[in-house]
Image (cartoon, rainbow, N blue to C red; front, side, top):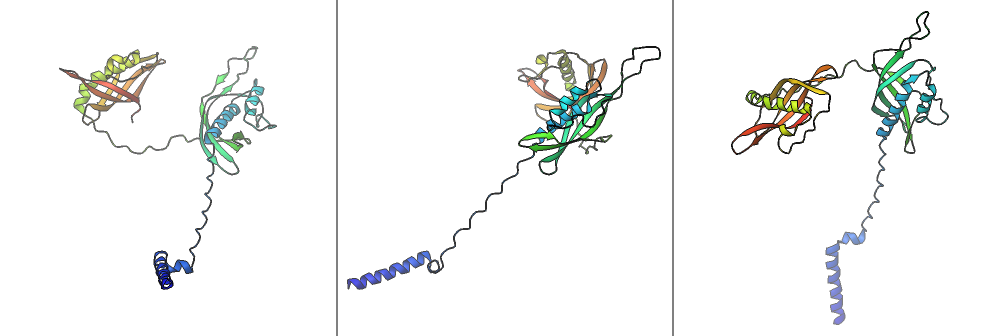
Length: 291
């Protein structure tokens, strides 16, 4: 009797277990999970900044030569060239050329850690004058007009360091920049422009005089211009249309600088400062440029 009940209980246990786990799982074992594919190792980005720095140093030394200082040029070039490289780099040792500015640009990666760096260089050739007939001393060297040139510099990255791999090549630079996209016209607020013109004029006078605290809004911090800049006047001022106690506008200002007059554009933020019985507009921020 006991054995019969035990056998019946085992049967029901098997039926319940099959319902829970599924008969198919008994017959066909579940597949083992597929191994995860190893994560692809991301390639390290090319060290553009280091390549630009080395290429700029090279370009300044390479294009700045003086036949009286040939050894100095070679020492400067050797600092970015592999050992045992001819540091003359194709220069015949004659002439003089001054480098006024260097601007590194795009880095184009090629292969095997190599890349090409575009560097733009502002040059001024210097022509040595011949002594006049009957005179021993030659007149001062004649400076030629400054000009921009492009230089493509080949570099290579190895063990985290950048070196110039060979002679570069001069390339041309466009005569003009690309065409700028059309920008929407900003609507102006004539009434506010007239109302705030005096405050803006007073600010720029103080901006050049070296003390802006008295003409800026509470809490504003606008460092004054350096000595040597003289304010000539506010050529134009127009506040943008809008609302609220903080507004923005465009100022055209005339400065006297280094013996010349120059007109420059500023975007000026003004804030309405209120007291118990009146309010006035004061400058809160100023940024050069029209945008």
